[in-house]
Amino acid sequence: MSILRTPEERFDGLPGFSFKPNYVEIQDPIHGALRVHYLDEGDHAAPIVLLLHGQGTWSYLYRNMIPILVEAGYRVIAPDFIGFGRSDKLPNADDYTYQNHVNWLASFVSVMDLQGVTGFFFDWGGMFGLRVAVENPDAFARLVLLNTTLPRGNKLLSNLWVLGWRRYCAKQPQFPMGTMVKNMTAKEVPSDVVSGFDAPYPDESYKAGPKKLPLLIPASPWHEASAPNTKAWGDLERWQKPVLTLFSEQLAKRGIKPDEFKTRIPGAAEQDHDLISQAGFFIVEDQPDILAEKLIAFIRSTS
Image (cartoon, rainbow, N blue to C red; front, side, top):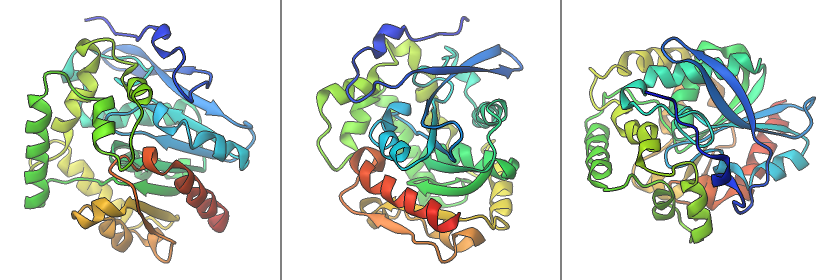
């Protein structure tokens, strides 16, 4: 089946999104060259911040943070995962495995020759990004983790939540993208912004990647990602580089907390962790200014 590319006119006039698109090719053993889209703003000689998105979103999520970071003197790189945003989309859901996403992201980091960057990982950005970080430690100087985890399928309540999330997504006649963001934020999301999150997907055939994500979360220790993620946790227990957690206070009250990161990763000790108020799951959409300020302060305090 042919690779899908969203027509460029779908991205015309998106609110707050006048950034120039950039593309790089990575190699896949089955599909050959795959085109990854990324935003690249700021002075190319400046320290790099790598922004990774999550489900329901693409690099459009960071449209409000990028100008603040650039103004503060940083180069900002924000890729779209394969299957998301302006990046190539594979129409066969079987192509989207947890390991493939890790491999694709690792290839992007390698092709871009990223060294000593600050990783800013939201949601699936952490689930894939943490795997890439421990396997490529020279690429990262520090990490910021937002409303994310590295699941192993080893906790009953978490497994039940995963199964419920899968059932919810499977029942939707159209897989929600912009609507998901709208329904999981603390603030009102304007309709044109909702449309911005939907822009990369002209129809359901373009959503094989997003649709597969709920199935990629380990819901038992026998899931294919459980063992590699468990190994990655062992590596994180030896990670000495600075790690900051910025989670939604709303989520923490429901049990989605950063405690495991804070207690098990040595680099997280004595950092200025915070729970962000007035923020839902899509914390970046709710509080971009506060997150940018805390990110900048963290980089400066650990440089």
